[in-house]
Length: 231
DNA sequence: AGCGATGATTGGAC
DNA sequence: GTCCAATCATCGCT
Image 1: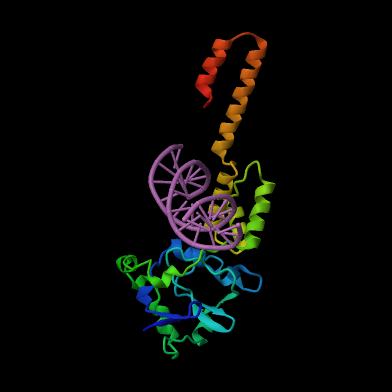
Image 2: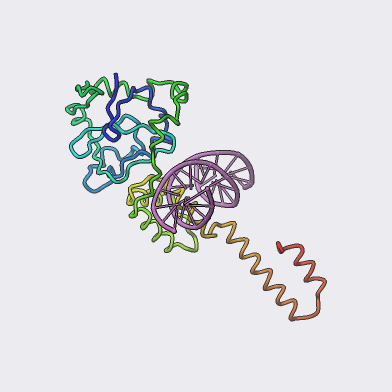
């Protein structure tokens, strides 16, 4: 049995789906499941979705596409998650355009049906996956995180609750929020270790300055410099 | 081809 | 578990 993925217009055997674990499926959350037009309450405690979960896009049904290495979620499409009732009344096409039995599909797509060996043996660099493109985070997500960063410039460390809120508002995952803040702090020299290092150096410089004004203590100053300064 | 920007990953510290 | 620095990978641009 093959499955038709309307996001890539390709058919796959279920065993070809290369990665079924939380690390990759977490990055495949369609953004609009958090949106205002979506009744999110039924899935409030579900923070990731499995490869093979079914979604509706512009009237067409599609499976969540496979999590190839370096694959990125498609943030630009207006995904709608199908709840269980509509899932069973929907249809899906196979490689020849025939309708498939959804109850069989859902059973076959359970990650438990495949061993970790089967999954890890898949070739992540197959031609099917090589077309994946690196995508930027949604502008809205970056804007929201940038605002938060500027508002907390002296301690840019969101709590877990704040990370979840930023992720929800931006339509991205908490993992992506973590990576964004880590990169942002590091690249703006605003991590705690770097701030501490700068503060120590500044204090050392001030002490050197004071010593040099108060009396002639060249020897102490040089020892101080050798001990605390990097150059 | 080279480069800067950016998102993701990794191994280690704690 | 979180956070870090370093690094990788891919984008757009020239």
